[in-house]
Amino acid sequence: MKPLLLLILFFTIFSTTGAANFVITSPPSSRQVLKWPFAAWSIWNLPIGNNASYEFGNIYLPNTATIEADPDIIVLNSSNPLTPIYYSSAAWTGASRCQASSSTIITKVPFPSDFIVASDGSNYSGAFLMPDNVTIVQTQPICHCTNSTQTSNVTTLTKTISVSIYGDGAYGSHGGSGLSSIGGTLRLGELIPDSNGTVHPVRHALKGNLWAVYNYYRNGSAVSSCFRWPATGCDGYFADGKSDQYGGTNPYVRPGSLLALNTSININNLGLKTIPGLAIAWTLQNYGMYLADDSYWNAAALETEISPEGNYVTQFKKAWNMDFTSSTNAWAVDVRSLFRMLSVVNSWNKNMWLNVSSSNGTLGAGGGFPLQSWAPPFANDSNIATPVSSSFIHTSSNSPKNSTLANNQRSINACNLTTIILAIVLIILCIQW
Ligand SMILES: *[C@@H]1O[C@H](CO)[C@@H](O)[C@H](O)[C@H]1NC(C)=O
Ligand SMILES: *[C@@H]1O[C@H](CO)[C@@H](O)[C@H](O)[C@H]1NC(C)=O
Ligand SMILES: *[C@@H]1O[C@H](CO)[C@@H](O)[C@H](O)[C@H]1NC(C)=O
Ligand SMILES: *[C@@H]1O[C@H](CO)[C@@H](O)[C@H](O)[C@H]1NC(C)=O
Ligand SMILES: *[C@@H]1O[C@H](CO)[C@@H](O)[C@H](O)[C@H]1NC(C)=O
Ligand SMILES: *[C@@H]1O[C@H](CO)[C@@H](O)[C@H](O)[C@H]1NC(C)=O
Ligand SMILES: *[C@@H]1O[C@H](CO)[C@@H](O)[C@H](O)[C@H]1NC(C)=O
Ligand SMILES: *[C@@H]1O[C@H](CO)[C@@H](O)[C@H](O)[C@H]1NC(C)=O
Ligand SMILES: *[C@@H]1O[C@H](CO)[C@@H](O)[C@H](O)[C@H]1NC(C)=O
Ligand SMILES: *[C@@H]1O[C@H](CO)[C@@H](O)[C@H](O)[C@H]1NC(C)=O
Ligand SMILES: *[C@@H]1O[C@H](CO)[C@@H](O)[C@H](O)[C@H]1NC(C)=O
Ligand SMILES: *[C@@H]1O[C@H](CO)[C@@H](O)[C@H](O)[C@H]1NC(C)=O
Image (cartoon, rainbow, N blue to C red; front, side):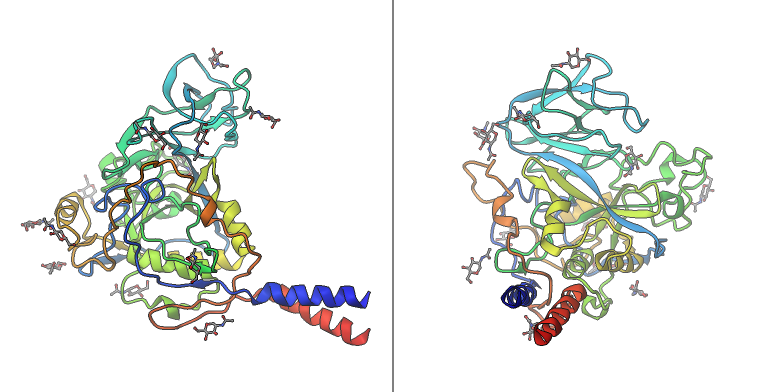
């Protein structure tokens, strides 16, 4: 028994010594279009500029609020069989989305027959790369209940919105804003340690959802008032007179708003408890987060990838031993506190974007010199459908422990208290035996 205990002790200590660090590594010199799509001047890729003007967001997010994922369905392997997506009226009615409601084919997209997307009421905004390897077709909510085409079609509700994977990519099928189904999504490998335990910065803007009842502004029932550029609309129920209508009082906060931590904030002094929390703080300050949809309950969401290569939240859980969706864990505490500090980049509109996008890297979102350099050119991929997941999946059992910031050497500790207590108990047991 004693050798076994020693073995467990050894393993426990070793499993806690592996450190993951957030390191502000230098930007790569090229990028893969499937992993990091759209032009450098896309809203999703532009860093914020140092002359941006901020208005405090005053986001309502109580301590009971859940931080959750709003998964986007992403299929970028265009060699998959062209598969019809049938119309289903089920959508968010609670009815099953598994069967088509009619023989209407909304579109045909490359789709793997064994890629299952449950009928569970989620938004499942979908993005599919077409066989030309350029066009991304988007529609929602995607459903594919079984891999048997005899019993289940792929289904969706909305008509498609197509963009170029090399273009501005702003638009897609997020129903509460019209924004992209893939731009701004947390992709596999992001906020996740690489094989050396290094968490690299996420160098693109994010997408998020807040509870519209408390956060999203409207002026009466004027449709033009319930969103702002780059959004093209808001939820149909925004002024329906029911308990779900938009009720925010801050006119700056609407679907389409770019939220960010202003540059007066030192993210190292916020007392963040987790490494992904620190890493996302960096992205919220340098790139920001566009409001894409209504979380519709006491929650705030970030859009995350579900693809044939994997499910982001599963990867997050494996890497950090924490649920992505939680109202109580250290990650949720970090994200809530960050969201409450967000401001709106108010000097950001279509005209400013036209100026910034033609500045060849000298301007950032909101105006002024970009806080980070623009996204690098695309690698000359001969086979662009290279799998995106394998080299990014963190397979070691390292638990988050330390964060080393390259620029100023500040660090935070995120030791797993349970593991420490377990180790102490084991030491006591060993001594007694
Ligand atoms: C892409 O899909 C095709 C057809 O399903 C498959 O043979 C191929 O292995 C896939 N490629 C990658 C990189 O996953
Ligand atoms: C897909 O749904 C349509 C409409 O319900 C149905 O006619 C068709 O048989 C289904 N396709 C397959 C391959 O099951
Ligand atoms: C379909 O799913 C079943 C059950 O999950 C599995 O056994 C089978 O191999 C799958 N078939 C294909 C073609 O993927
Ligand atoms: C889901 O999409 C619907 C329809 O587009 C939108 O009204 C709502 O804001 C979204 N809800 C969630 C849970 O994100
Ligand atoms: C890990 O570190 C080694 C040695 O410094 C380096 O060669 C390798 O490229 C690194 N791996 C990653 C994924 O950065
Ligand atoms: C709200 O709409 C009314 C009537 O259209 C307009 O007079 C008022 O200025 C608007 N308020 C704001 C804050 O935009
Ligand atoms: C920056 O954000 C912080 C925290 O949200 C806020 O207290 C501060 O007033 C803001 N500063 C400026 C200059 O906007
Ligand atoms: C865009 O640039 C032009 C020319 O430099 C300038 O006159 C205009 O005010 C700028 N527009 C915005 C919205 O910054
Ligand atoms: C754009 O910027 C790059 C350097 O970042 C420079 O080499 C290039 O000449 C610039 N192009 C134009 C048209 O100014
Ligand atoms: C910075 O923004 C202010 C407005 O907020 C504007 O008046 C000024 O021209 C801008 N400066 C530069 C260098 O873009
Ligand atoms: C698209 O990419 C796939 C996978 O790399 C490749 O097999 C195919 O030939 C490409 N199609 C076009 C039109 O370039
Ligand atoms: C944690 O980071 C600090 C600051 O860089 C460093 O001195 C220390 O060695 C690190 N500790 C571990 C366990 O990695």
